[in-house]
Length: 469
Image (cartoon, rainbow, N blue to C red; front, side, top):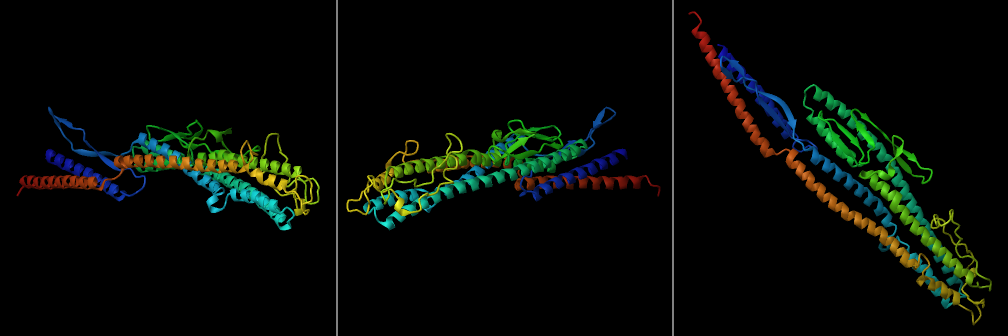
C-alpha cells in the first residue's frame, strides 16, 4: 500500500509541477508583445530521494522557482547607448532651433540684410543728393540692426527654454531615482522571502533605461536583485531603498541653472543623457554663436561709424555716428552688441556720403564716402574677415555642429537597434518555442494524470481484495 500511495504522491507532485510550468508558458505568451518583459523559465528539480533499505527511491519532481532570462551586461550596454542617443537627440533638437535662425534659403538669416545695407550705399553713390536714396540707406541700416537684435534675442529665448528643460529634466531624474529606490525595497523583500521578483526586475530594468536616457549612469547589481546607481563621475543617485535628489540652482554668473548633487556642482561633469545634450547646447554652442554674432555686430558698428566720421553730410558737416556706439560691459568683451544694435541717425541729410565736404547737391558734389561705405563689404572688419565671410563662417559652424551630431546620432541609433535585437533574442518571447514547451508540459501533465488514474485503479483493486465478502 505504501508504494502505491507513494506513486500517487509522485504523480500528484508531477501534476502540480507541470501545471506550474504551463502557467509560466501562459504568462510568456500573454506578454509576448509587452515592452521590457523578460521571458521566464520554470525550474523543475528532482525531489530529494529517500533511502529504502539499500535502495534510493525517487520522490518525483518539484518546480523550485521561476527565473527570468536576462543579460545584465547587455542591459548595461543598452543603457550606455541609450544615454548617448538621448544626449544627441536633445542636442540636435536644440541646435536645429539655432540653425533655423541662420537659414538663408528660408530668408531667416542676416546675409540678405548685410547685402542690402552695403548695396544701399552703392545706390546712394549714383546720386548722393537723393533724399529717397538717403532714406533707403537709413531704412536698410534699421533693418540690419533689427535683424541682429532679433537674432540675438531669439538665441537668448532658445537658451532660456533649454534652461527650463534642464530644470524639468532634473526633476524627472529625481522621480525615476525615487522609483528605483522603491523597487529596490520591493525586490529585496520578495527575494528574502524566496519569491520570484522577475516582474519587479523587469520594471527595474525599464526604469534604469529611462534614467539613463536622462543622465549618464553607472549601475552595480547586487545578488538580491537590487541596484546601486551613480553618474559615471560618481554622484550617487540610488543606494538600496534610498535616493539622493539632484537640485537645480540658478547661477549668479550665468543666470542659468546649475545641477548640484549633495551640494556639489556636477553640471560640467554630466556625460550623457538628455541633460548633457541640453547643457551642451545651452552652455557651449549657443554662447559660441551668440559671441560670434556680438563680435560681428561690434565690428560692423565700429567700421561703419568710423567711415561715417571720415566723411561729410549733406550740409558739409563731419559725419556723426551712424549706429549707436557700443560700449563694452567688460574689457575685451562684445557681449550685448548684437542685441542693442540700433541706428543713431534720424535725418537722411546726416549721411556722410561726401569725402571732401563738397555739397552733394552741387554739380560737382562728392560721392567718395558713399563709395567707401559700399567698399566696406569687401574689407576685413571682423577678426581679419569681411562681414559676409565672418557671418558665413558663423552659419557654417552651426550647420556643421548639427550635421556632425546628426551623423553620430544615426550611428548610435544603429548600434542601439542591434543591441536591442540581441536582447530580444535572449530575453524576448519566441511564440514557436513557447508552443513547443506548451506541448511538452501538456504531455507530461497528461502522463502524470494517467499514472494517477492507474494507481487509483490499483488501489481500489487492492482494497477490494482485502475487504471481507
